[in-house]
Image (cartoon, rainbow, N blue to C red; front, side):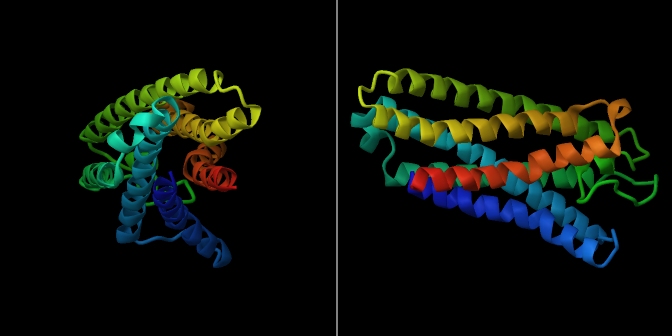
Length: 237
């Protein structure tokens, strides 16, 4: 568990560092400027860290399922090598996700100006600047990504349902509290990330408004990593 928490902490730190420092610097200098390369880097690292974090949360759900529901098989199913391989797969999934979306987004011709109406570079805001019908490729890729994310979310929910059933059979109240405290915070984080991410990336353009876009962007890019950090503090106590 602590090995996965270390990886999760690094991903939380990376995702927060992708958007917040630049936004704070722009606020201090009273500017909204960012270079083309910097914008591409923001999108790449945001997709990388958030995608890897989501994948790792799925891995952690499986880790807790085995630890609570099949404790005698834990050493066999999740040895050191298996844990390293699963963590590496989570980081690799985030990298592949980031590479696909960044390359697809910045291959589009932009002819609607260069003003991104957000405090960081965001794919839906950049798609608004495109004048080519090829932007539907990125929209299709986003839809596929979120169907995969929903499949992962279903796996996480099923894992936690099995965990809750096993926890309710624990006779010790302290044991039940400890088990729930290691599962429910991350389930809440995953639920917020998936729901707000879907709103941000899949909502119709006609329903878009700057205040709503800002709130949703904060909820999927800033709040989940912060909540994950708080959840880690609860688990390690």
